[in-house]
Image 1 (cartoon, rainbow, N blue to C red):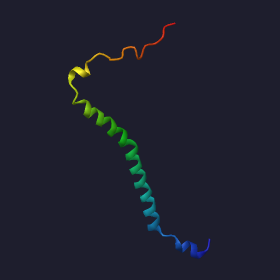
Image 2: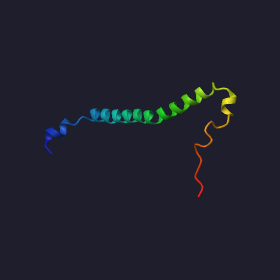
Image 3: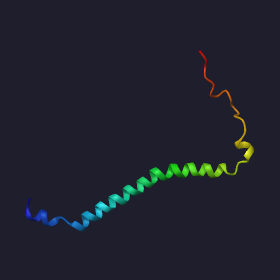
Image 4: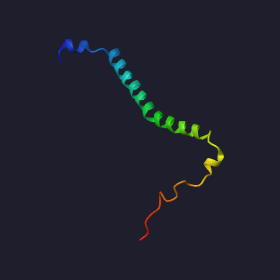
Amino acid sequence: MKQNEANMWDKQMSLAQVFGQMVAGSFFAVLAIGIPIAFIMFFYFIGTFLPIESKQAEDPTPDSFAQLSD
């Protein structure tokens, strides 16, 4: 390795890039985990406004999961 190449390495810049990659990765992890959780919580919140009767009602399509007997 040449002397000029060894002097060009900047430790602070390398640390800044490493921590920048870690922050970006954590941001993407929050998106990957947070969006499905927010989706579920949104529909749970909407479901709290439904009347009790609609939650305890019979299935409107009872034959939709019927299986053929042999």
